[in-house]
Image (cartoon, rainbow, N blue to C red; front, side):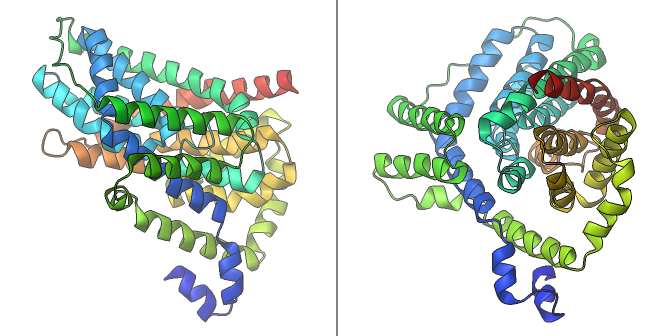
Length: 376
């Protein structure tokens, strides 16, 4: 409706609306969702979760395993999709071991968000930054990945501090061995490794991911209709419309005027400026959501023309998603997938999410600046 109204009121011509849609982001989202669908069909998530759980042995160890598994997978397989497939496994494991599900669900959601901050393919807002900034995968990850790893470590430690004592120290029974489809898993693993290698080699992100998807479609030698059915088409349409709406808003000049007026207070070169930017990104991400916030902030960040400016935008808007239960799509997915087994409440999540978000930002934003200066 918003995109349609941009044409109706004359803010944009139809040709301008088509040009406003970032094809690189749409292609990358489509290809990554297809790749992850193949990864899931090969049984990788069940295999990885089962392996992590067998090594955990105790409820505290399981909490750490869930946190690290969710974070690491989200760096390369998109956080929302990881939560879709991982949450049911976490619920099933917790129920069998008769453990409280709340801490494990919070670990899944918050760690998925933090891990996704590490790369340009970890979440939709970072994909947009990849298209808007022109940064290479390696350049972005070189600064963002250490900060995301530190954030994940802080979050995992805080999870143990909050919930470790209540979980007890009983020995968990190892789950039944899950046998993935061997040849299929091998093909999928080869394709994913190839795509990641292409990312780091500087290949076009969208076409590198599409190459992996096409290779699997050909190698599987079966109708890919099942895979296409798992792609979130409404999300792709939503992103296309969102690009048009933001372009229409930008055409009014209000966004540029706001950035110019606030420029003296939003500098990446001073502690006060970084604090103001961080506060703006957190507030904006929770008011209008992180993806629109990235689109609105992109013109001002582009003027800075620095890796730090783009990484800070992606990192803070991603971490901001951990503030509340409705702060990110990943959080909502975890709550919805667990419904019936555990009602993850707003206040239950907020008690941890608020502290985690403030701690991660307080430690990792200065760390980002220090890493950028050392690298520069």
